[in-house]
Length: 162
Image (tube, rainbow, N blue to C red):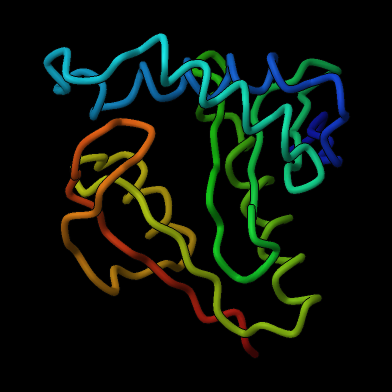
C-alpha cells in the first residue's frame, strides 16, 4: 500500500468527497440495476451534505497526493457507515487502508466488534468485506431516506478482539 496516506477530512473537502461517494455508488452493481428509481441529483446532494456537515467523522485516503476515497463512522461508535473509493482507484488498496483505519479507531474506543451494512445485491462490496474477515449477520429490508424507498441490505460484523 505504498503511497497511500489516511488522514482526517478537512472542512473544505465536502464536495470533493461527495463526488467520490456518488461516483462509487454510480459505478456499483446496485446503481446499474436501480432502473431509474433514485433521484440522482438528490442523492448527489446527500453525499455532498455529509462531507460538509460531518467532516469530523470522515477519514480520507490519498494515493500519491490525490484524494482516492473516504470512510466514516457517523456516530463515532463501532458502526462503519461509509467506505467509498473512486472507481479509478479501486483495486489499489484504498478500501483496505480505510477499513484498517476505521477498525483501529473502533478498537481504540474499546469495542471488540466492528459492524456495517451494505446493499444485499452489491456482491463486490460483500466479497471485499468477507475477504477482510466480516461475516453476514442479518439480511432484510431497510428504508433508505437517501434513496426514498426500502432496499434489501445485509448487516455484517467482524470480531476485532484478540
